[in-house]
Image (cartoon, rainbow, N blue to C red; front, side, top):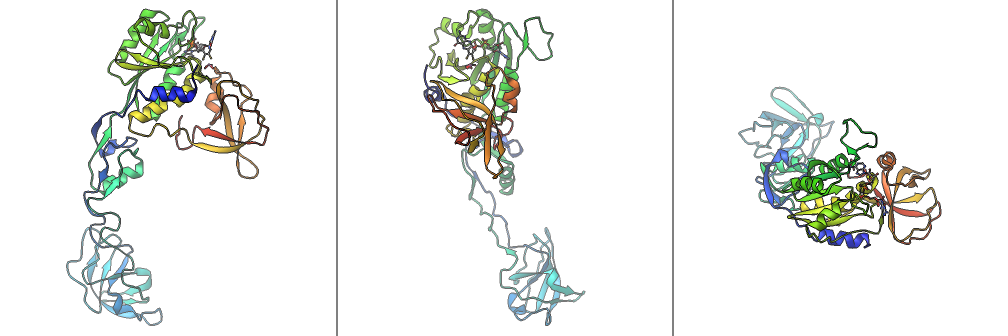
Length: 409
Ligand SMILES: Nc1nc2c(c(=O)[nH]1)N[C@H]1C(S)=C(S)[C@@H](COP(=O)(O)OP(=O)(O)OC[C@H]3O[C@@H](n4cnc5c(N)ncnc54)[C@H](O)[C@@H]3O)O[C@H]1N2
Ligand code: MOO
């Protein structure tokens, strides 16, 4: 058995970022930029009013107060989308609205709350400095300026920014295509009639969902029977995908055939077993042209190994740093932890807030890798190094969060 770190290093060495494709801006959400995005215009393109009020020359109203307002001549209006065509001379003011171009000659905007007006004139009751309530041309960004760097996964805010830069197309890494194959005579699809010793496949749909949350496209190949022919025939459906992920059949039982099918095809496995719990029976190799990640069948083992190995592969394929793991926080244990054995452990646990407002973490008493109800309820994992010493209740530990910043894991 090799360590988790060694397994990750061997597996990730087999992948590199996928080529770029061009997508329309509205389709860019969640995609990773293969090229930086640069502004195609200056924003704002002109000096714009930041308030509804009056465009004035600051020098004209330097002495204005509530009790001694300055009287200006009203000469026109500048509204958003409808600039005032003339210019503001001494003693003059233009009615202006937020976002409208500031007319030539004016160098400040006074809020309408500080003024009173009739059809011909405006009384300004407050002095302002030059530049007040004016957003200068380019104060957000200038044409040609880089707005978003290569390698960024686009948020809703980024889409808005690129739109502001008048950018209609994006160059993004192609989405990873991940084939998912469940194995086992006992496994049936959700909703199918179940035989007396059959169970429903939780793993394949869970993996498809995980792939989707991480920006990939899952192809669910279905369920292979426990025969070498069935496994080989169904695995062939992965041709053209960037990775085949199998679940089940990875251990050494008489019906655990994924490993045998690979061996028959002369596949050398870079990873055969990993010193971790859950997830010992993890495999990685290359089946023909498609890399294969063989995950153990126990549902929590599939889930945790997918987080630790499939998630970084998906990140790497999309041009993101693979080494950025799940968001980690420090939390106080509410229960003691036993000393660990030689396998790196990932305890399922819940995070909450203690009386002092600090995070506290409670591992579940039952840690069997077949308990899906507790895995779904967990909102964090407590990683434990091989041979970690016992911890008392109250000790601080690092936990890996499943919901923070990465919803739906
Ligand atoms: N003698 C040994 N037995 C086992 C060992 C071992 O080291 N020596 N390891 C155990 C561990 S740990 C795990 S994990 C499993 C891994 O086995 P496989 O990857 O071969 O998985 P299966 O035997 O096919 O299934 C295990 C378990 O998971 C259920 N399963 C499988 N696929 C699905 C699915 N798609 N949805 C839901 N549940 C699934 C399956 O019915 C079994 O209950 O091996 C241990 N044994
Ligand atoms: O690896 Mo098994 O995954 O410990 O249940």
